[in-house]
Length: 264
Ligand code: SF4
Image: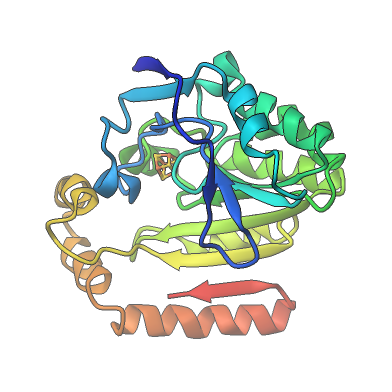
């Protein structure tokens, strides 16, 4: 992995999520190395290999926040704020310290349990929330699709610690890969530690997309018997696979009274 430092980029960016005005990427690039990462399609850098830190992220952000009223800011839109290099560069932590000092709050999406390092800081923010995303229970399969993430069990344990502290928690089951992701088993693992569970199918619009070119060879090599079924469902959102799964999840939602948000 190659670490570079920049000095000029804008830190506070507009955010298109509902009820959130701004988002912050504390790094450019992400060494979690998810082969399905949608950012790969738009990245102007070698996304997984080159991580760009900011030399004066706190000073720059402090300046940008001068005319912004306290509000919740989103982390994790393009890059993971708790990817491995955060241990060394602590940019996310420094930014959160500044936001707390200025009475802002944070909504965080991550695949790492490093977020629990900052749990007391997050608890002191008004209405802060943490979301984890998970898609694979089997670690050998996870490593095929997410080369450098931590296992799902650790992510879920981390989320539980945050919930026990009174922080709002969410989980994203994302991406659901047909005939690979066990959505129901993941819900079983998540239902006690996530206030809300969002479920997103793998979204590939075009076979020329970079992330499809990255993951298609994984299906070909490691899932030869399921390969055709997987591909048929990925490229057809009206496929029976999705309809059957949706019906099953609607039933679970009703019977267990869970806040499940089904997005496929
Ligand atoms: S954690 Fe998120 S940003 Fe990082 S590589 Fe994976 S999908 Fe992309």
